[in-house]
Image 1 (spheres, helix red, strand yellow):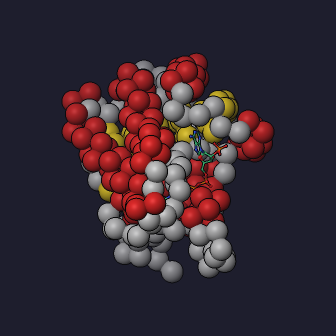
Image 2 (cartoon, helix red, strand yellow):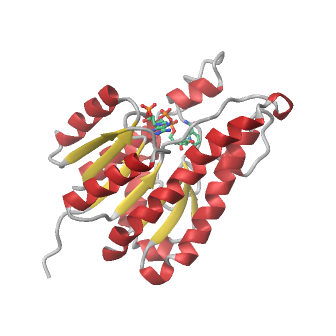
Length: 242
Ligand SMILES: NC(=O)c1ccc[n+]([C@@H]2O[C@H](COP(=O)([O-])OP(=O)(O)OC[C@H]3O[C@@H](n4cnc5c(N)ncnc54)[C@H](OP(=O)(O)O)[C@@H]3O)[C@@H](O)[C@H]2O)c1
């Protein structure tokens, strides 16, 4: 049977890590659906991706909006199907001691960082199942370590990790796989927002994760499902020898 194009959705693809992942996928020949809230930077990123020959659809809007998620999956369907879904869009929700945290803000951090990825998975699974596809959910070391000031963000990422491992088990019989990826510290807007007074020029650019993405997208999804990867880990399988 003729196998058509490969298609990926990447949320938060207008800059930072999401833009890097989208560019890796474009280089590998994927057509793309890319998402972020602000239209102009998203359209600029999409235009740059399309220069590599991929068909790229840009969907602007907040990932917590059900109509935005529906547009993302509809766009993938319009491109022919879905092989990879990358839930990368995320918000810090403010860094500071829990004693000063307005707990109402959990109502934003958890829906963006954990709820929206699961809701997008729910919509995308019928397409992913047709192609034995892969879900990639982006986490942080703050999901595993208790860093003062990082409680709400870390808790939302810890929730995403458990949800991802659960999805990997629940979706196995449908042929859909799910992995967790901690990209490590990177010089991005989110990282600068977390450390507003710091010079973060010693942190690597998100391009440092490219060897990992190329390794991951070479794998058979079912063989990595349920795993957690650290994209910058020094002893990792995907790092090239110096
Ligand atoms: N940078 C680090 O050191 C680091 C470390 C560990 C984990 N991470 C994780 O890596 C991922 C990417 O982070 P980054 O550092 O690349 O961040 P970034 O440069 O700030 O990029 C975030 C992207 O997500 C989009 N976005 C944010 N909130 C959104 C929403 N509610 N709906 C739709 N799109 C939204 C942004 O565009 P708009 O603002 O236009 O919406 C942008 O495209 C995140 O999951 C983050 O938690 C980062």
